[in-house]
Amino acid sequence: MTTKLALLPTRTDTPGRTAPALADVQRMVFQATRGQPRPLAGLMPWVLDRRNLAAAWDRVSAADGADTPGPDGLTCGQLKHRVGPWLADLADALFHRAYHPAAARWVDVPKAGDPGRTRRIGILNVRDRVVQTAVKQVVEPVLEPVFLPGSFGFRPGRSVAGTLDAAVRGLSGRDGQPRLLWAVPLDVADCFPTIDHEWVRRSLADHVADPDLLDLLRRVFDASGETVGRLWWQRRCGVVQGSALSPLLCNLTLHALDVAAAQMSCDTQGGAAVLRYADDLLVLARDAAAASRTVAALRAALHLRQQRFRREPDPVPAAGGVEWLGVVLRPRALSRPDDVEFGYEVPRAKIRSMIARLVEMTAPPSDKIDAAAFNLAKWIVSVSGQLRDWRQAYLYADNAPDLFRVLDDVARDRIGELIKAVSGSSWAEVRRSHFARLPRGFWTWEVPGARLTVLSSLAPHTPARLTRRPVWWSHAPDATQPAGGGD
Image (cartoon, rainbow, N blue to C red; front, side):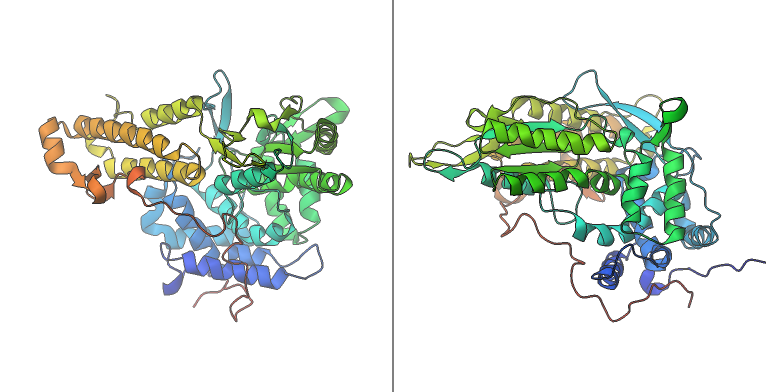
């Protein structure tokens, strides 16, 4: 007869109040594993820690897709009134190896700024989203110290702005020339669908020795991947793009490229550098030959993982401008002729794709949707979140003020139309009921529970460092064991 694992959250671990508790858990995982010989055992109890599971639920239930049903039809809203017992049952299933992830529901969405190409997004059951988030929260402090400085994407304390700042610093120089003269932008072809399961398991085995956690990850891989090839060279590959765990697995898989890049930097005595944001790479080199050698080394490392670059353009002089991560890196005009300083701008094509995204996000409910059930506040929160994400990415672009003015105008026009369509009110009534004044002459729309962000009204912010260590990268609290039991 099996025993039921008591993992009901205590008062201090209640879902909705778990951010400090999660930081403590990640600090303790980091401190308990730091300096220990690898691979590491004893990680699964941290996954089952009631604070970790409650924090995973909070992240999943606060995400934009919280009310998007998985293959089983359940949403976070249907579970929120019984989340404590539901999490306890989930922990019990994980503890007794009775948990089996379901296959994702697949949706093909167009790639922004890339007509004709789509991205395959997997929609998981809420249960599987929570499990993958809980695993990610524990494995992240184990893998993060291993990753190299040239990797920026989907890492705590790092961002697009930090990546572009590193590119600008690598290109800027003195004596009339940038320090690294040549550039090659690269991206991995269909990165998430082509991640090889065998390579992921081998890479994980270098760091994780917990058999329960490895078995759980095997089941997650099996549910999310597909078999490719035929006869004697069949293999399983693919992770769900859209899950919390997949970006971490992507970084682990492509860590081999960062190692190859670091070796090339050493071999060329600093004559080459590689920046990587997830599956997008930028090779910077002193000359075209060093750039080509670096690309060849990266290609070889990627080929071993059964992946390839979508295309390999020839090295180009950086002074002519380089398109990467949605911006154009180019020299700035300076009064001192012996100095070269680079900056970047968001090009018009990218701005058009951002406007198209706002139009898509603010489409009014169709005849098939009950306008009375349309959650306008949640829609505004989602649009505001997208605007703030763009601000975080492009705040330091040379044309950021103009960009933000355009986005503000489009967002306000669209949200105003949306309020009018949903409420059935006249424009005069919409302005009377939802107009909100902001400092310095700015204005926006608001509804009960939400106010649309206006990027131009936000004060400029220049932190001392754009790249920093995660909040949990410090000494752990006194407790060094997972809180897996009940009260």
